[in-house]
Figure 1 (cartoon, rainbow, N blue to C red):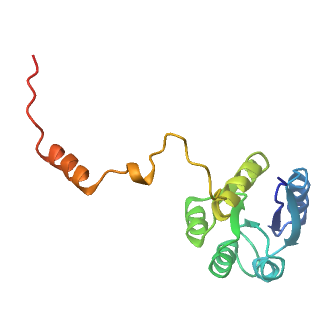
Figure 2: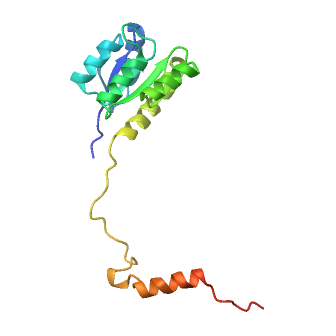
Figure 3: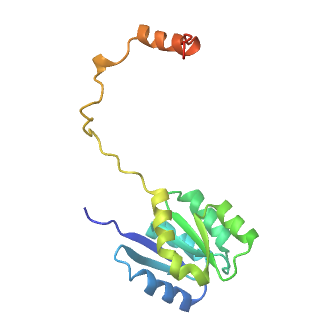
Length: 169
């Protein structure tokens, strides 16, 4: 079975950060960076056209910050995962990003080491689970005719409600 590509949109106002993240992410065979944006407004427009699997969103951005952009993306495109990141992650900005719909918020200094596993978890949270249909039942599974009758079920309930006294030596 072929591995599904994860399409990522990078959003950061620093070109060097975007280039560095792109290099790191494209070293993984199942990740493709499909676009880059330097502000929140551009990111929202790009999400509409590119439909990435995941957006890696800086919190502190010009024009529209990462919190507002994340809220817009998750409201209009709930099937797209967002991971927030920032140079300094404060509890209030982390809370606001999570409340806006980000899957997780990473500090930039840990992003390189934790980013791939974070992306995998975020994508797993939005993609549907594959369920095998018509899976064979185990041989010892009871058939329909072996299901308890309502009388047998009533007897079990009666036994649970009123257990018989047993003489234990």
